Amino acid sequence: MAILVKNIKQLVQAEPKKIKFRAGKEMQHLPVIDNAYLLTVGDKIKDFGPMEELSKIDLNKIKEPIEVIDASGRMVFPSFCDSHTHIVYAGSREVEYIDKIKGLSYEEIAKRGGGILNSAKRLHETSEEALYEQAWQRLEEMASYGTGAVEIKSGYGLSTEDELKMLRVIRRLKETSPLTIKANFLGAHAVPLAYKNNPDEYVDLIINEMIPMVAAEDLADYIDVFCDKGFFTCEQTERMLMQGIKYGLRPKIHANEMACSGGIQVGVKYNALSVDHLEYTGDEEIAVLRGSETMPTILPGAAFFLGMVCAPARKMMKGGLPVALASDYNPGSCPSGNMQLVLAMGSIMYKMLTEEAINATTINTAYALGEHETVGSITKGKRANFFITKPMDTIYYMSYGFGSNKVEQYFLNGKRQ
Image (cartoon, rainbow, N blue to C red; front, side):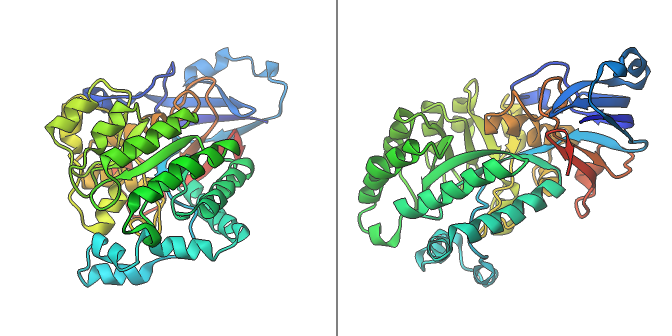
């Protein structure tokens, strides 16, 4: 099947060549073509450009049937990329939300057996089939808001059996969903109660048993660690990352959400693809990240939901860094995978220009997924993941109109969903 979208008011993030990401002042640059067309063939982007150049294309050479879509008054964006989610989980945790309203902190709830440990208990009691069905519904909702690629973490198992169960669910989602999915092994999401007095013993379990078994079944693309105050130390994190690297898993890190933990430095040291959260990021961390291959990733939804300080996005960009924005969709600190809302929060909470926020939710998160060669922009040869908006006057409505779904139609792998 081929699709020709014509009379596009603005074709956004239209990149003539593949790029890794945008950083610093370059994040204010957003390539847009007015009055444009987009042609896809099969699951790939075939061509795009101004409408006056459409006549130069010999459509008769395309052997597949062509569906023509008139996008007058509408814009076309590449699908969002969400590089940090925890969407394989059982049930919800709204009771804990009431505890937060009453004044209990994230750490206090965790110490009472809530938080991640609560989700681990529920996951243990839930079948693989039920986990798959719940995660599938979440993926469908995310796609309806414009997301086309997503990273999904384990981390609510906290035992070898249940971590493998989660990762098998993610593998099944990879096989059945039209979204591009990457799997991340996060056995080090929290210390189980059974190891509360000896967390190093749990670290040993991850190193000696979990990682080899995850690798043996080829269940994960990445390894992640919650390197932060009250969770895992830098030394413990390094031990787990080294084992993960040995088994072919590139690191990603939860870092500096609770304090200046050293997690950013550890991430850069081990060439992590991304370091995520980053509420507590100072001059030293910015200097370490500058020039590295590690993508700083901010999770606005979690900071908003938990009432935390905001990561210094403007300072990071002023320091020459790229910034990515992801959802952190999870049952405890961000029960939403709406990347339109994440984009708007980038402007509302972090004072990012709309152009910066769009780059942060498309090309930069594609890099944080390890998929910048295939998604994140309108570029020839990339996967035909895009959405057509409802009628819009300017791109700035994406930051401004945070309460409504602006997607009218969406396409994944060149197919209408």
